Length: 177
Image 1: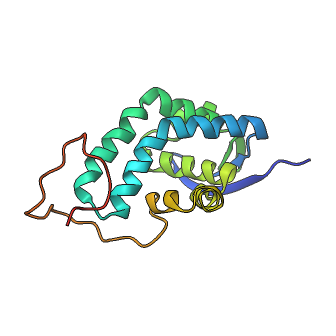
Image 2 (image 1 turned 90 degrees about the vertical axis):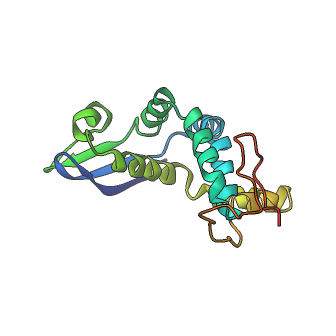
């Protein structure tokens, strides 16, 4: 049985880099998905709710929640797990990506997240669609609404005068009109 591999070009310190990601084996992929949910779930849910309900005033709380759980150590843990079998090809030479990461990707912060997103897509496809499908089958739709997969309101850049500025303990939800 062959493993699914996909390749995509990214910027690196050596110019264009063709990065190939191989899917994790089934059980390892499942464990990694659960770990991703533990680390990123609360922050992403808050972020999705802020976008879904058009609440720019909640974005900072959602981002703080996301980055509280995504520490340097957890970021490195996820990066190493998702890219453990990845290769990079630059200037005609293909090699393992992780041993080259520090020099190859130094100063390329925006590319780090693009590469990680690519690795997530290779391993899990579009997981917002998967979550929405699970939700429709089992939960009747509320997760789809929370993730913002339905209609979205435009973000409000400034809270309305009648609304108080939310505290970090404020729950996410539709604005009080």
